[in-house]
Structure formats: structure tokens, C-alpha cells
Image (cartoon, rainbow, N blue to C red; front, side, top):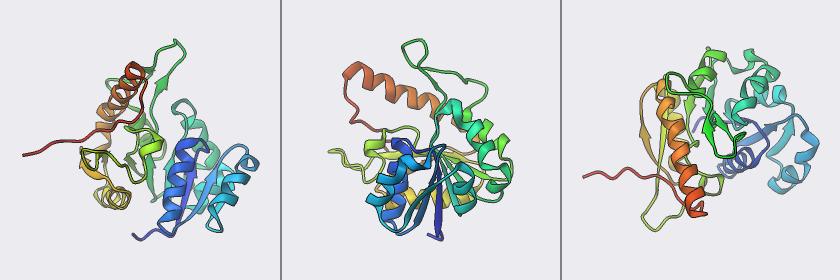
Length: 214
């Protein structure tokens, strides 16, 4: 993969897991957050290729960028990062428009729009690829299931960007299903809801999607 440096926006579990996955592939990673000092332990644990800074630092640093923010905080994070820092870059969008304010999870966007599409509109010169939004962070890197490797469903408008993201998925042990343009985020974000609802009903989070073919 022709990636030297990766910037991750978001310092929660998803950001740390994906950042660590890129480090294992040999890339330098900078995680951007509102409070970089809280990542000191993570940086030390990941070694010399890991660092932390502001959202703007991470966005300027990365050749490839990862959005791992809460859905409701994504636009704010993008603007804090500086919209010009996204121009021309592949942006892996792992966000979901989830709302837990009423107790049970709901989507606050749908069905005629999606957070993935909104992100592409907010950073129109970036090459946004929706991915890693339909599985829990515990299984994002090298997923191990009895039925074999699961599939990562992706979408985006730029074919070369999707090829690069597909390579990342493959290196991390995933099959890849390309659902076309970024408007297919309208289906991938509800797919996350199916993953969440199953987890709540079974009190288990060890599941992933796989498309069977014959």
C-alpha cells in the first residue's frame, strides 16, 4: 500500500484500534483529539510510530485519514481539523449517526440521506470511503470467526480510493463487498443498527456480517 502516514480523528476505542492496526502494517499514525494528553499511555504502548495531537495536527499529518468520531461530533471535528487538510486524501469513514438519547439506539439520519453523504459534502475535495461501521472494534483487526473471514461492506465515489481501502481490509483479514457510491451509506448505516440490535438482544457482541455466494 502506498501509505506512509495515517491521521485518525477520534480517540475512542475505534480510533485507537484502527490506529494500532495501521501501526502493525508499518505506518506512522497520529491520532487527533481535543485532549491529546489523554493518549500518552496509548502512544507509549504503540511505540515510535505513534503520536497524538489536535484534530488539525492529525488531518495535516496523514496521507490517509480515518474518521472515528461520534456521529454527532463529526462535523465539528472536521471543521476543527481544517477542511482544506482533507483535499485529495482518502478518508475512511467509520462513523454512524447513532442516537441513544431515548434509551434504545436510533438513527438520526435516514432514509433519504446519510452521514457518509454529509461527510462527503462537508469535505467535497476528499475521497470518502464508508467502511468499518458495521462491526465492533474488538473484531476490526484480524477477525477470527468459526465460519471464516467476515465481509467488510464499503462504499464511496472514488474507485481508486476504494481499491486502497479494500487492500487495508484484506491485510486485516476481511473479505470486501463494494456497494458502489457514497449514497450506499444509506444502507450501511442501518446495517450498523442491525448489528447493534442483535447485540442488545443477545447480550453478545461477537458477530459480523458475511455475504454467502454460490
